[in-house]
Image (cartoon, rainbow, N blue to C red; front, side, top):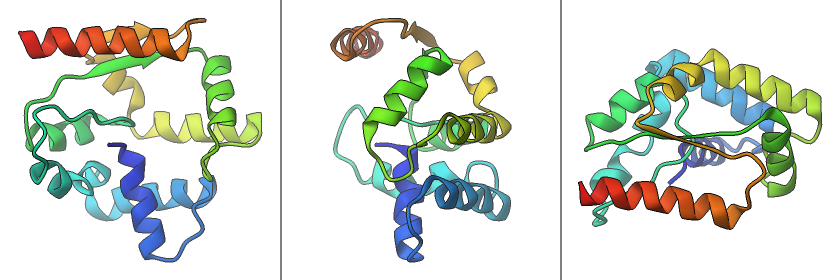
Length: 153
């Protein structure tokens, strides 16, 4: 699951174009109206109704979202850190409608995410992987090993 999927679904429900600007404004609006954990709240029913023993949630930005998720089940937090250049290349190539098309839009997105508490979430991670010049397969393998270790413990 991806927390951004909840925002994209809400944008669709409101008939908003899923551009980066629209989704960013909607994310901030939902947090202002429903509290700092509002984006995680969009996925709690889906999580509760899941039959899976392990659910991986991508895109957590704030400690408030982490608290919402902890109230839904057992949570471990894996931070994947990468340079701005690495993240920009990834987002530029990913192809989602809300991905930044310019470095300026990327920096706006970064600043918005930092403003909602991304740094604090990274600081409290249970484990961190540094994505520095590794392939997607290598990153996936590293993450898989961490998750397997958590399950085994």
